[in-house]
Image (cartoon, rainbow, N blue to C red; front, side, top):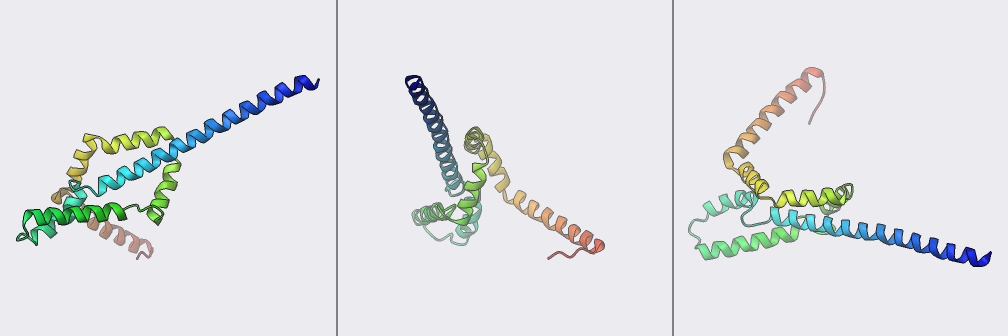
Length: 161
């Protein structure tokens, strides 16, 4: 009887180790994909041609029209490098929170999200949202909405700060 038990135990051990290795490999793949998505997000935000970066630097450039173009491009490259170092810095509260939230997604969802962020359609959408008229219009709409919300809260006896 002992000879029959040993092969079964060996077989069961092999199956369990294989299952553990498969689960562990999937977890590693997910971590790699999540890190890649965070890196992509960092690159998207802190890219010289990103709409948010252009919007942030446009007033600075306009206030420094006398600065020669090569000097401006050097400054812009420095700004981009600093932003890439600081945005979603490994270990920062924002990084930890984002990584924790992304862990809730499946590997397929993270891959799909990453593909969407890199798509030309998303880049065009991002550029449209960064348009100054749209940004200012959205801000104006938010202020008008907040004014109405504050009035509604006041009428309901709800205090908001």
